[in-house]
Amino acid sequence: MSANSRPPIPRDAGIASIGLNFPPLAMPVEELARLRGQDPAKYTVGLGCQEMALCTPEYGVVELAVEAARRALERWGGDPADVGMIAVGTETAMDMSRPLSAWVAERLDLRGAVRSYEVKHACYGGTLALRQAVEWKLSGASQGRAALVLAADVALYAEGDPGEPTQGAGAVAMVVDEPSIARVDPVSYPWSEPAFDFWRPVGEAYPRVDGAFSLDCYKRAAENCFKALVNGGSAEEVLERAAAVCFHVPFPKMVKKAVVQVGRSFGWDEERIDRFFADKVEPSMQWNRRCGNAYTASLWISVAEALRGLPRDERVLAFSYGSGFGAELLLLEAGPEAAAGAWASDVETDLAARHRVDAARYGSLRS
Ligand code: COA
Image 1 (cartoon, protein in one colour):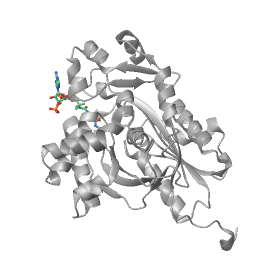
Image 2 (image 1 turned 180 degrees about the vertical axis):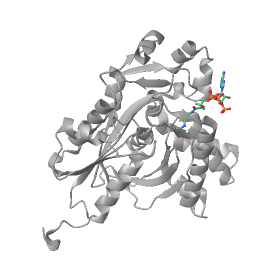
Image 3 (image 1 turned 120 degrees about the vertical axis):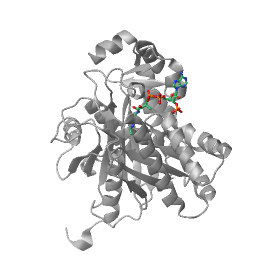
Image 4 (image 1 turned 45 degrees about the vertical axis):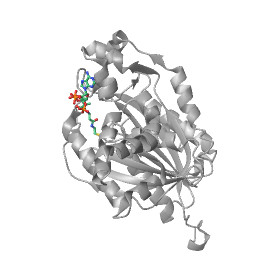
């Protein structure tokens, strides 16, 4: 292809289609509290959790990712041969070498001139995959082709671990192309510091977590990212312009604590902070409460909920955090197809179809 026959470099790029998938089982956290001899209010009020989505031996991270991708591609309506990149963020790796994207490509028969890979940075990996896809489009390297971006995870902790009530699973797929659902601003606000706040050594089944330290890291990252966004201006003005402010949701109370720290850093009083949380943050965590922590997918489940039904040009802020740690604050603007919110039917379908697990079934699933 000669340089002058190349497709024009797009001025804007973003989300052209969304697909979500939740696994077939769920357990209310009150049931886990009974099993562990805890006061259920610790999980529901203290952590803000509601239900943990659970996988089966037959339906795990591959099936979640494939079904979310299938739904996103179908809704996009483009030719799968026009997908030139498959980037998957996950911390539920199937293999130390073979990327999860290869399982997805295999099941959906995507092959050929495709850059296919997995991104790892704890819960931040899906955001990195999305950023890379947007930058690939805006650089002109995509040659007019689309990217399939995935964030998919199964979050499990050791039985009896304090993190157990925050467990969950889910997948979000996004086709990155024309920003018909949301334009992703090319400018974003990253913050990283090397830390051991949450990690999973090679060969170990479950993560190790320094819960209090990870909360400190998350709050500090949020404060720095929002400070960079506001950039010495009026926090009120910058943040009020957003219709929704989405966060990575390890558990809802963690988000509230970060909002308190961000608000205080801007000199807001408690009433102002509570109002901001209730108006801008809390409404787009309802899907998260139904699935628990889905690591890389967690933020994008919240963003998908925030975008559903949003009028064109309305703004969404998205704060991504991955332990280790890396964070980034993104700005999205709703496109013409956000208002229809077609992807909400994925959540309705999956929630209606899933089965409730009791303590006995949970025990057998874990053994
Ligand atoms: N009723 C209401 N609230 C209660 C309660 C009860 N009976 N018992 C405890 N609580 C509250 C506590 O006061 C606390 O709230 P606060 O933090 O606002 O004070 C909250 O419940 C949690 O209690 P705590 O004793 O701190 O829980 P824990 O030591 O069992 O920790 C986690 C649990 C989930 C916080 C944590 O250790 C963890 O592992 N988290 C994972 C962190 C993570 O996912 N990091 C990933 C990177 S983002």
